[in-house]
Image (cartoon, rainbow, N blue to C red; front, side, top):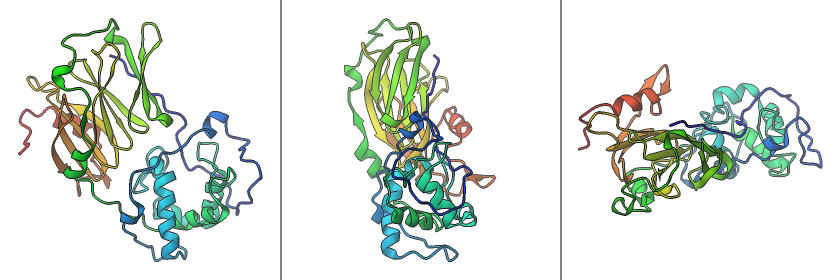
Length: 326
């Protein structure tokens, strides 16, 4: 089965000028194509008040009230692209080791005017006031506030079986060639388009998490697992007359990858997903997404990078016959 992923412009912080912004009356950005200007980051479902503050001694002055407002703006407008810990995702990292050397004026120019690479023009478009642009430029030079945990209780509260296994088709109920079907990410809408590769027609547009990062086919070829950057997983049954969701779950606040077991005799028995935050992976039943076990990956690093989402690690884990689920 072939899968394509279509992602509207990646958001990045690229070279511009280090001058204080004077916003134009128009929200237009003359060097950025219209389709890029339509890009919108998604809010991350974190209560800003629950994210612990950590001010950097070298950072510019910022009051407690300003920091609280900046957290709200960041989780609502920025975290979906730059990550809840500002370590980068679609957009580039915004940690103090990067932002402090740039300085406030430089950051204000980017936040205010955006860039041809896809950074939204929050200031000149009127989405943020000049005061808020200045606030965010200062906020980004301090340590990222740490989000709350997302454990088994929180994960289970999001788990939903839309169609029970015993109510699903016993055989393929459509005539699509499942060896030539594409899953295309409709990033800004929180959907994937299931496309018939033979006719190039859309079979169905399925509601998913935000900015689906991976569309993964099950070993059997029946199920499609998709995971959004917001850590929401959707299980799509391709045997249905019109392929659609049969289960869903959220395994954290930010994630990238999902896989299913490949070991002989265990095909699709389990699914696994790694999360950037919290740094952990979640093992689920393959046909319902019911969470079975959470394993923390704190402290597991390769060349200073957390390996929570290392695709090789996930694939190796899923080929182990005896997963310890106790």
